Length: 73
Image (cartoon, rainbow, N blue to C red; front, side, top):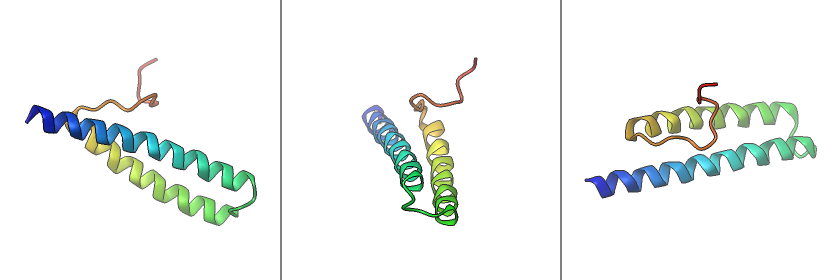
């Protein structure tokens, strides 16, 4: 069981990293005028929803997001 949990953590951390890349690419596409504001907002909402679900899954298995804003100051 421990091995499965570690595998899930690793996969979720990789997914979190990839989602950050998607956010960066979306911003870049908007800055380069490849996406208009409406498209950017729509994609941003979808990415935010995915991020929320991913965050819930990570919390369930005890995986800490890398560089998240949830860290206390």
